Length: 336
Ligand SMILES: Nc1nc2c(ncn2[C@@H]2O[C@H](COP(=O)(O)OP(=O)(O)OP(=O)(O)O)[C@@H](O)[C@H]2O)c(=O)[nH]1
Ligand SMILES: [Mg+2]
Image 1 (cartoon, rainbow, N blue to C red):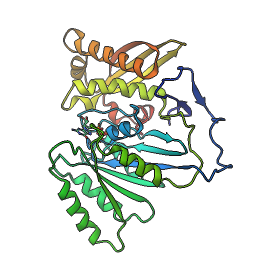
Image 2: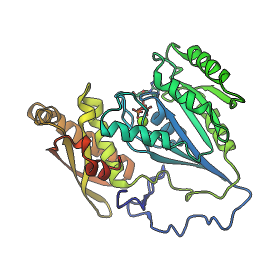
Image 3: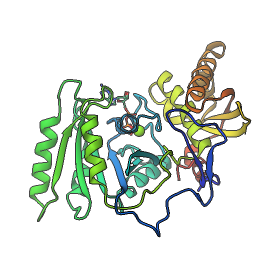
Image 4: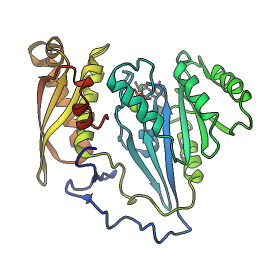
């Protein structure tokens, strides 16, 4: 695992000073030994096909941009934890990579494995489906898997209800068929939401907060993510490439923060943009460096908004042949 994984990044809506972090043993965190019967806390795995809107929903539920979002499938590559605390209740969301079938490449296999493993030991599994898209086989796979679930509460969400309904009824029929084959199938709560417009998201948030078991809070209440800061910054930069570059190229890009020098009001960041082949380098840089310049500007602006410090960002494009098959690089990026 990435070596800074025990350094917890803390952000709040009012953006705390950048030096504010919990390190190592988190002395301020509530103690497991002193449970208060007044608090509820638990974990929710957010799963589904790529592009269904899982990360968008989590950002909307927490009111923070914790996880990156883009129109390109397979945007999320790590399991990102996002924390929602409201008074005496806390929900820890596990945002997962969308499961997909083009799973031959090592990176895809790792992503599928991470997503499937995320449902172990959680309190709720939230299956997010894109109601406006053609039904996908990945949803079928999740339903078959969840039909065997005995312990965990299940929530099936039909997302993108701001758009025309293409598959809502299909998904319901599909579940009816799958659950009919199982003895004593689990109870499902269905909800229709729109992550982008926030429709029904308040109801969903309430449902989740109340579904958490009695437990001490799992994280300090002002913490919104424990995703290592360097990986989070790399992701925010990668998102800017994804929204600019379509088709195959986004899947060939990885962003690694090589150095992060933090002073009180300025962060100096050097990030390496990895591509798989020489021919991709030009596309990432763009004519007269336009793409790279635009990405750098957009990423620096967003990082400034999120962390509340001045950002000095340097991007270096590197060809790392078949990085997505290299176990050690995947490991460094937190993908393996
Ligand atoms: N119209 C509409 N678009 C949405 C909604 N929710 C998400 N989207 C869009 O769907 C696309 C994918 O959203 P993401 O949140 O990245 O989806 P994801 O499920 O996390 O995708 P992966 O990380 O690739 O698995 C983005 O372009 C979002 O803006 C919604 O409720 N309505
Ligand atoms: Mg995502």
